[in-house]
Image 1: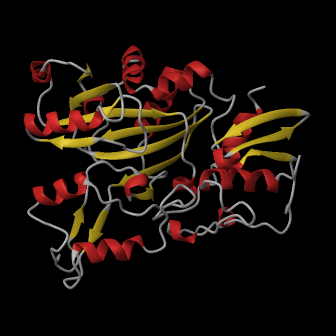
Image 2: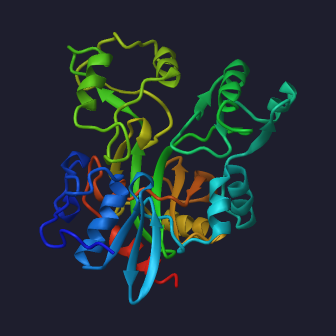
Length: 349
């Protein structure tokens, strides 16, 4: 197994001062890996453990610890999570059933298959959310749909990416990602939807181009470029805006509702500010599917209100948990979550 650059390699994951994700420095010699994998490799190097790159294109590696070999895919997929736990989290409808079994709040919704009857949509109150049952990174997810016509168009689009589609009631609030490792919350990030703030001079298009500087187009970077698609145009139109509109100085405009970093969202660390009630919910949600490493997405309607089941919903369980948002947030400090992840992986055998 290779164990190169143990002393000379230095990644920005060594950085401890607060700062934006743009402070991320690719790990020398491993720049072509996703940022989460780079973070794990940096931790392996710090521990001076022998490891082997099996398939660089698939972020697949093997590391040895105490005479045992551990296979790690994309930084967090490993024997730490069982196959059944991973399978549950990969199916959004299946996830809902396990959340329900554990008494965890989630949105009311229905599951559609091709050939569904339009009348079935009447079971879901507007506004609504439409999402494919088994995609990730916010692909074909449409939120805050105000009419049946909008819902039908979103459903048709979602069916291009999955054989089954979920339509559920829209739950207003702010979405947070809880990183649960070995049934303990190690970091919490507010993932703010893609947005720009006006200066009274530049158009929305120019503001987007400016904000995209330094961001990546793939997960080799903690922060990704704002993506142009129909959802952005629809969202601007709903606010009587277009790409040529000029915002007032200090005026912030959101370009979409979903807060996925893959579409240009910002990660803001709020680990210390998050009430323990919701951290307990995140742990319980991970336990419901048996996930020892998980990114739990929770929408909280009013974080300043007294915590209660009616004030939140769990949106998704993510077995592949993105670590870079917690080590290199747009705003906040490095939580160094990789050390906890590697520890739980090594405890799986």
